[in-house]
Structures are given as structure tokens and as C-alpha cells.
Image (cartoon, rainbow, N blue to C red; front, side, top):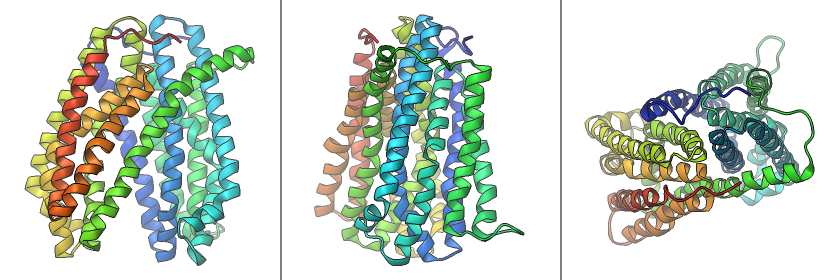
Length: 448
């Protein structure tokens, strides 16, 4: 196997830029799929829109497992790349992909068998329950098509190639969005399939991306070994991936859980505040895309340089990433201060909702850089093989600052006080994790 990109030499900032920019495009493409599904299904009726909303927590949880497995695979592979052991890299790529398929196969069967009971317990009933079960029955079939491209993309990024994973994400989104109206509403000989049509569109798009990703891994990069290895070697690979993958999966579930708790806290202020928080959160998520892309880029750089015994390059990459997040957060704060009211007006014509959106955008984005520090530090420590420390960073922000401060503020202050508490949580967690993460980078890497 010929290494696509040696991240242990050359300008660190250049590597961050080259790996990060394609990911910005890819993440935007992935987010567009959910927006397209909601748009087209919303035209069918409220029941379909409610059904797709019920599916989100389940699909997000499963996607978190895939993200975690990808983080584990990227961590172990990038570190071995740094040592120059190319045969071991191929073995790890093969075994991590096999593990991913095995895990999602089990999850698919369990999900399919429990689908109706699960969504009924979540509160879905009647027509909505029938719709979400029909949608998820098809979605579960396509689960391997979801996880294989995600893990394959992580493996390619570990090798320094961010363009192919980004291209795969974009092409998958294009196929999904083109098929959505055709399969949902019908066209010519293709019958209208409604809710199930959206699921089939997603399945076909992901199948396309899986074929593309596997083709690159097998034929261009030659990263997969078709011969079966001894069980002891496979088990060793799986243990290394799971050591990072399990805490990374759990860490990815922390944020949506905290958002659910905060939504419940804000519910005491009325439905308008809840609606405003939902809209403002989506706006903030779009503003955070460059930081998310940077967190995907820092992993391969960290892993390769740790494997090569070059922690000073990791420190440079991390500090540069932290400073970018702080600067980007300040830029977004200025943007929202100037245009917050206009942006809010696009999403609602209710004065109360608009007022709360504007308040949120005036307060929280000032501290967006603090949240960026958290996700960069977590991605770095995942790449170092310290998955539970990475999860600890998320827990520190969420359990120590984010939820408790928001809960306390809700008793004595109006809604803007809760928003201020979120901002304080971002600042405190960012400052603490900035210091903690940098102090641990020079520790010797774990053997594996």
C-alpha cells in the first residue's frame, strides 16, 4: 500500500486546511439530506412529518455508533501509519470494516424486531406509528450501507485523503435528493410510495456511496486484505478499535441527550421559546460546520504524528485549531449581531419566537469558540487512543457546566438567562479543556 499523504512532514496548517475544506462541503451535503426529507414529506401531511421526527433519535443513535467505530478505526490506523508498518495498516483497515458490518448487522436485526414496540413506547400511535415503522423497516435494511461509507471515509482520512470521503458524501446527497420527489410522489411508471419512498431513496443513495467507497479502498488504495487472518490477529484489531470506538459512540450521544434535557427546561417558558431554541440551535449548527470539519481533520494528523513520535507537531495543530475556533466564533457572533433579526425572520413570523431567536444569537455564539475547543480536544484524544478521556471532555462540559447552569438559571431568570448560562458553560468548559488537553499531549502513546 502506498501512503496517499504523509502528515508527519510539511506545514501543519496546510494539512489542516487541505483535510478540513473538503469536509466542510461534505458535512453541508449530509445536512441537506435531512432538510430535503423534511421538506418533501412535509408536503404529504403532518403525520408524515411527525413520523420522520420520531425516527430521528433512533437514526441519530445508530449513526453515533457508526461515527464511533469510524473514530476508533481512524485512531488505530493513523497511529500505525506513523510507524510505517503498511501491512499492519491493511490488516487494521480490513478488520475494522468487518467489525463495523458485524455490529450494524446485529443492530439491524434487533431494530427490525423491536421497531413497533420502540416507537410506541416513544409515543407514536395510529397512522404516525404505522408510517414510522414502515419507514424504519426499510431504513434498517440499509444500515450496512450507512456504516460502511462512514468507516471507509474515516480510513481514507487517516491516510490523508479527505477528497474522496467528501466526494462520496456529496454524491450520496445528490442521489438522495434527486430520488426523494420521484419515489415519494411518483413519476411516470414509478408509483408514489410516500414515506417509504423517502426510505428507499436513502437506501439507494447509501448503496451507491458504499460501492464507491469500497471501490476506492480495494482497487485504488489497496487497503483491504481479502485473505482471512488468524482469529487472534482479528481479535487484537477489534479490541483496539473498540477501545476508542465505544467511548466515541457514547460521547456522540451526549450532545443530543443534553439538548433534549435543555428543551424540557425551556418548555416552562412556553412553546414559543422551545420553537426559538430549536431554530437557533439549527442556525448555530450550521455556523459550527467549519469547526466540525476541523475536528475530523485533526484526528489523522494527531494519529500519524503520534505514531511517528512527533508530539510537537500535534501541539502545533491543536493550538492552531483552538485559535481558529475562537476566531471563527467571534466572526459568527458579529454576523449574528448584525443580521440576527433578519435571519430569525426567515424561520418565523411570530414576534415572540423571533425575539427569543435574536436573544439567543446575540448571546450564545459569542462563546461558540469554547464549544469548538471541546470538540477539537475530544477528536485529538480519540486519535491518541484515549477514548474515555475524550468522552470525559464532553461530560465535563455537559454534566458539570451546560445542564446544571441552565437548570439553575431557569429558576431565577427569564429565557435569556438560560441562554446566558449556555454561554457561560461554553466559556468555562472551553477554558478548562484547553488547559487539560494541552497538558496531556506529550504523554507517551498507548501501545497497540
